[in-house]
View 1 (tube, rainbow, N blue to C red):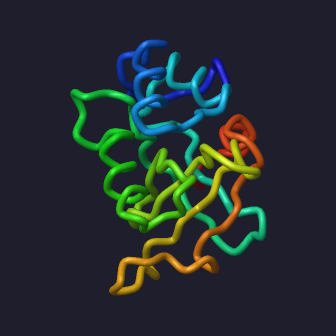
View 2 (view 1 turned 45 degrees about the vertical axis):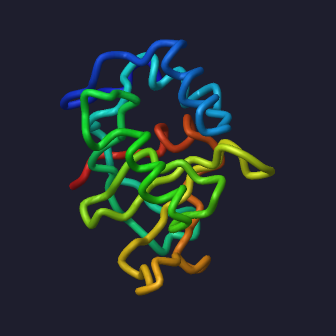
Length: 153
């Protein structure tokens, strides 16, 4: 994870920022994801292609949301926009987006904690509810997700 390359990234997150974010929203960020934020804190990765474990979806993570108040598209904004408004499951934290603005989410509470899912927002109903069939597992951990990313042909 240390050698993960970015076209650009943001000022590393501090332990204080991470603690404040977890406390304010009652979340538990996985250890590997916290380490990532303390090194890179989001941005545009060089390796970005991924597929869901069921091989149904192939997409790219275009942007990892930073934990930064100086950037509008940050973790807190997407958490409020999609989690607190109940579009994605209550234990999902949007951590990035693909070219079609669908979300890559990290599970932050419960038995699936630490897993990474793809939330296909192309199928968002008018009532703003994402049906379970449009939520697909990508990886069993954040570091597994990073290690699975590959270059677009």
